[in-house]
Amino acid sequence: MKNLHYFLVFSILLLSQQLEAQKFFKIANDVVDEATFKEGLALIAEEYDPQIVTYKTFERVTSKDSIIENISIVVLQEDEEEEVYRVFDFLGKPLPDFEFSDVTGSSISKQKFSGKYTVVGLYKDAAQVRKAHIKSLNALVNTGEYNAVALIAKNGNMAGIAKRADFPVLNECISWYIDNISIPESPKFLVLDETGNLKYIFQEFPQKEDVIQPLDPVHLKIYDILR
Image 1 (cartoon, rainbow, N blue to C red):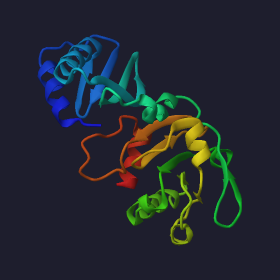
Image 2: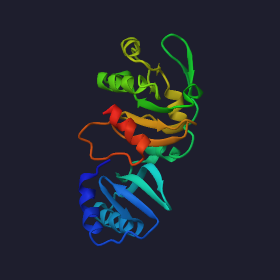
Image 3: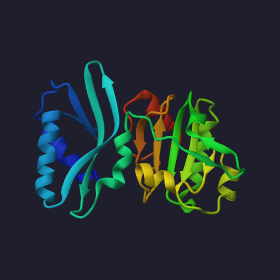
Image 4: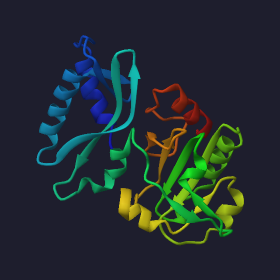
C-alpha cells in the first residue's frame, strides 16, 4: 500500500473543506470528510487508470456522533485480485477461530486469548519472524495486560523462535490462512479485543518513524509498546 503521493492530494483538498459531515477518513495525518475523500479518490483513480483504485480500512472508531475510518489507499493491477486483502473484511468482526499445536505439542486455540487484547502476528514462513518482533511482542506480553500469538503458514524450523518467545508460536497454519484470509506475502499484525473481534490491522510492524498511527487510545498504547 502506497501512501506518500496520496497524502499530497488529500492535503490540498483539506484546505477548502468544512468538517460538518458525520463520517470522516484519516489518511496518514490528514482527516477529511466523506465528500472530500470521494473527490480525492476520484482524482487518484483518474491518474492511475486503468488500474483499480480503492481503499482498505484498518481501524474504525466512533467519536461522539461521528465515525472515523483510518485507511490506506490501494492500487490494484488489472489482473490483481483483492483476495490478498481478505483480512480487512473482518474488521469489527470476530477473527475466525483457530486451533494448532505449539512446539511442545500443546493445543492452542483462539479462545485461550479471551479476556485481554491480543496481537496476532501473521507470517508466511518462519524466516519472516524477526528478533525485533519477538523482543517487542515479549515486552507487550510481559506487561501482563496483553496476549500475543504468531501464526506461521508454512512448516519451518521453530525451535529457536519458540525458545525466545514468551508467547505461543504456531506452525503450519496454512489451512487456516487458505480458508479464511489468504497467506500474507509480508507479515501483518492484528489487534483483537477481549472478545476476539478484529479492531486494528498493522500492515507492517510498528516503527518509531511511522507516519500512520492508531486513533483509538487502546490501539495507540499497544503501538507505543511495540515500536
